[in-house]
Amino acid sequence: MSVLRLIFNILWFVLGGFVMGLAWWLIGLVCFISIIGIPFGRACFVMGELAFWPFGQDTINRRYITKQTDLGTGALGTLGNIIWFLLFGIWLAIGHLLHAVVCFLTIIGIPFGLQHLKLAGLAVAPIGKTVINKQRFV
Image (cartoon, rainbow, N blue to C red):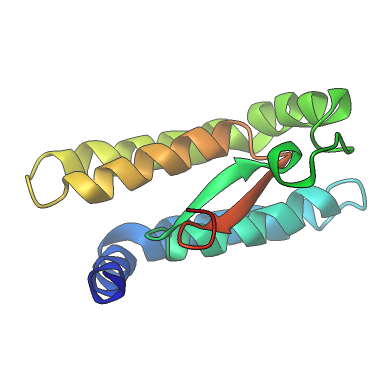
């Protein structure tokens, strides 16, 4: 199973994952310009890595792992997600949705389109989420 995951990740990287991963990282650099944006920028680099190699990984609300509410999973996290969506999230989500449509045009591209849809949902509200390895949590 891990060989198939590696093949999918390599194909993903070559056929569009590289572009969207760079988009996440570019927005992360923009966030680092202001001190207030540093937490957003750090999250962008983590999510950008997920955008480079999404197969075998998923995102989950941190509250389910830590069993407690923290700054990103509470009310301030919701406010941060609203600000994120208005400034950057909408553009990343549109990018992932456009890539998903192109991938869905072929039967072979359907798994890649599904990953783009997953990442588009993440682009809408990434604050309070963490990246997990699916094998460790199954």
